[in-house]
Length: 206
Image 1: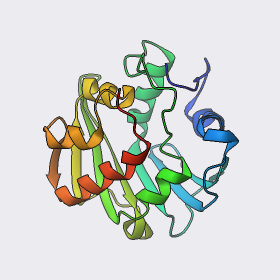
Image 2: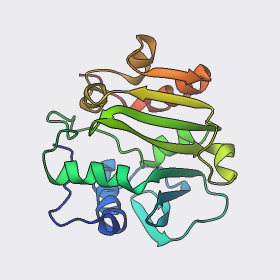
Image 3: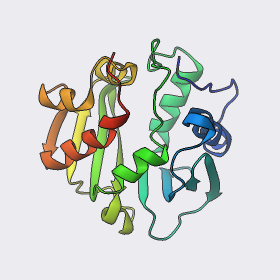
Image 4: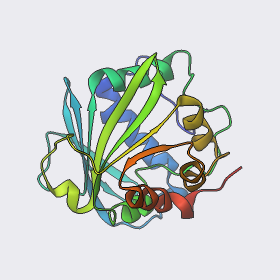
């Protein structure tokens, strides 16, 4: 199981307003002793809602609407988020059974600080989720200061669900997955490497 729970009855609204802020707080080491650099993340769910997350240490404030010139933004279809949520609440095919106790959240300020140095727009995709390809587009650094536009990403990173589980369980490091082709890369490979190495200091392979 992941080191946080998605309670029965969780909706898309409560996922972003309640579950993710609580998980962020619970997953930070030493009660939120991570750097208190402030980061602003915009999450746009097409066909649903747009949220802005203001992150400083263990604190994550959530508001409706898109902040101007965020540090990061994420663009994803409502159906794709719902697919993940339905899996967490149901069969849990995408929930790793052996997730490491020291798993670092992508919202951890230490991770965000490193990712903010990568000025890029990237598409991240799973090829075989629910019988179809499921993707999101995310921008970081200087690229996030531009409009929320998912077209023409600098790089496309694509893998299958089984490889996603291995990455989360810690049996395969992101840089190794890139090197051996487990993650397919189209576009600027340097950016793919920068993204992988942003996580490297917090990754303990099993």
